[in-house]
Length: 216
Image (cartoon, rainbow, N blue to C red; front, side, top):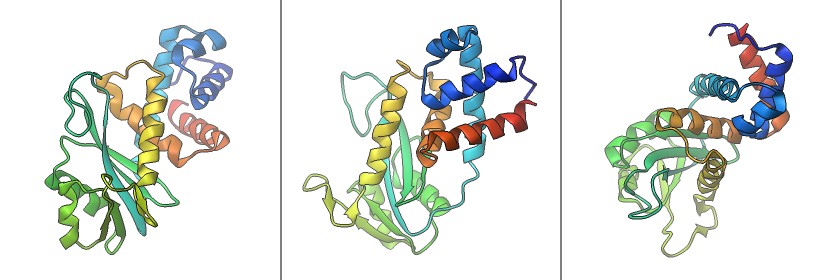
């Protein structure tokens, strides 16, 4: 990336507001830059985050997996298969990190290769009762499923962790009043990165390091 024309002081303030979750419009006013400048700088930060999180190692241990749908219009069909929504698949290591991937559909032929790549053999995998997960019963993983029509948790058998992440991600994206489809993957990975690095001071340190390596 080419060197930014912004002063280091303004870049530091932009990064701080990004970490705080301030919108680009509000940040522009507070920092004293053009709105398009703030928007572009935030876009570059999301690009750096996207590149950084793609190198995560596979998960092992107890893993929760689930799919969710983002965006689209409220009216009409909702939930799985909802028209106009972006399907996303997620894996969460209990007590650890989350990994997300945009998918074309929630079929077994789509989900299984992702799980085989991102989860080590003999791990314990928790899912709901979507039929696509039936393939896990004859896989190298130990598979447990929870029937949400009956209960949401049965001791250790639940997917509350990954569902909590979905709620956090959607809450974060709502503040932008719509995320451009072409950039949705960047916002998704930003949410993943924030979840995996929950402390603001850690986020600030990591971002400044990424900027220093890329912008200077």
